[in-house]
Amino acid sequence: MRVQILYSFFILMVALAGHFISNAYYLQVLTFIGINTLLALGLNMLMGYAGQISLGHAAFYGIGAYATAILTVHFSWSPWLALPVAIAAAVMVAYIVGVPTLKLSGYYLGMGTLGFGMIINIIFREWSSVTGGASGFVGIPALSLGPVSFSSRQNYLYLVWGCVLLCIVLCRRIIDSRVGRALRAIHDGEKAAAAVGVDTQKLKLQVFVLSAGMSALAGFLYAHLVCFISPETFSFIMSIRMVTMVVIGGMASIWGSLLGASLLTLLPEWLHAFSEFEMVVYGLILMIVMIFLPKGLTRGILDIVERSRRSL
Amino acid sequence: MNSDHPLLIVENVSKAFGGVQALSDVSFQLFPGTITGLIGPNGAGKTTLFNLITGIFPADTGDILFKGSSTLNNTVHELVQCGIARTFQNVELFESMTALENILVGQHARTRCGMWGSVFRFPWVRHEEGRATKIAFELLDFIGLKEHALRKSGDLAFGWQRLLELARALASGPRLLLLDEPAAGLNMVETMQLGDLIRKVRDQGITILLVEHDMSLTMEISDAIVVLDQGKKIAQGSPRSIQEDEAVMRAYLGTSPQK
Picture 1 (cartoon, chains in turn cyan, green):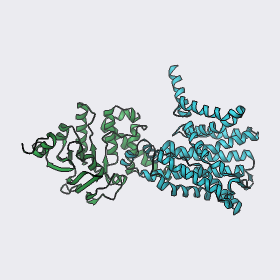
Picture 2 (tube, rainbow over the protein chains, first blue to last red):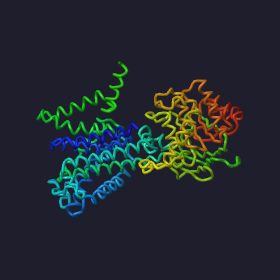
Picture 3 (cartoon, chains in turn cyan, brown):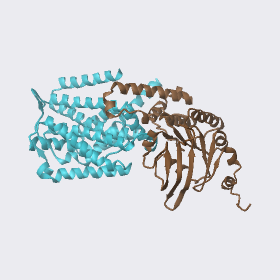
Picture 4 (tube, helix red, strand yellow):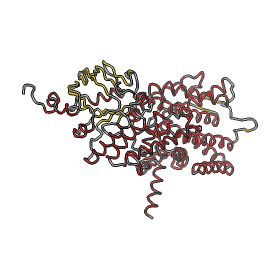
């Protein structure tokens, strides 16, 4: 019941935002928060719940974006046809990469996925005949569905946040099930998880593939929003930003992904005022959050609320 | 199953780690519905034997037969599915999860909802979930922790954690239960309660292989004892005959063979 109320509130907020905000800049920022939430949500399933780190997730984000760009521009496909193919491409790559890499754990898994992310980024950069190389890929068409054109910023906002809601429902359902419990069991102790009958390799692979698919969806939405993509966007830095969103927002917390993505999207916008000190302040804020709220924003804020309620 | 047919047969099993021969040519059998104590000094190969039976690593030579078929090519989780469950020497609970959730995960092998089932929540998934919760509460009741179902397992007292791990192992519906030093770290009262529980489990028809350093507990509840020393089986028999066995005395007390 509480969940339904939460979802209704969520839909209402998105509808209100779309209805009352007409400033193109704000709409754009809100849309980006949605895309980043998708990224954080997918990675949180892997990191927060299953406890497996990936430092190469920007690759899947990029595969989603480049796949739809190539199919719609070079082959003139409809974007809606390109979407499932883009997701399938990321899922397939995740499967192939996941089988050997997910046998690693801890730092080694971090290194493995880091290397993978770099390889994919180099492919985006160097395979110029297909990807446009370092100068990027131009002319990606805007989305439209029948009479509805998503070149309107309001409509795109609805589209992105619709996808976010869908993925939140999806993730919540997985977490509140036998599968979700097994994922958390792997996080707490892989040896013990195997000893109660969890096929840890298979489950880790499944969740890796799932999070890759969600990142690819985010890539698709990004490509058709900006209509121009370049390898920079999907570099190592982006992978790190994704990890930061998950950690700052709160590991193993779905609403934490939303919070982390919001903060990391908004901060750079707010901090423009500091001009050349922007990155310094940005880093400082992240440090302070981690020192005082080590479990991330969601858990940290909840703890503070509980403590103040008890002291009343 | 006829009680004349062994549930588990360990046949001439050897295992070496580098130059160390952890087990050499060990054979014994476990009969359904019995408690077998596996004892031996430190480094005798007890834990290695546990890991072989549960499929964590394979034997170098020899074979292990469970319900008549070889387990050598099975992975750990497949063997749980077949009916082999275990507990760990150092309690390995899922500490961030509640006692109830620990037992629900314990039922992983006998439930089947996957990714699609969890997303679409078919009627059978809800049914399965309800059944699993019912079984979990029954098991919590069995170990006497029903009131603590919703507490984080990491926050429970150590003695309770041991019991919870036992219940989690039972949740998979095993035919064979391996207990690795279940009484380590428990006080006398808790050890006695544990002994009672283990007997009750046996009376449900579950076969138990027990590694334990608490000799009074082992001798009291075991139907048979297997003694390992330096990777070799040196004795096997009833608790009484083992207590009088010379080879066992030598292994434990270090009496010189010449006297």
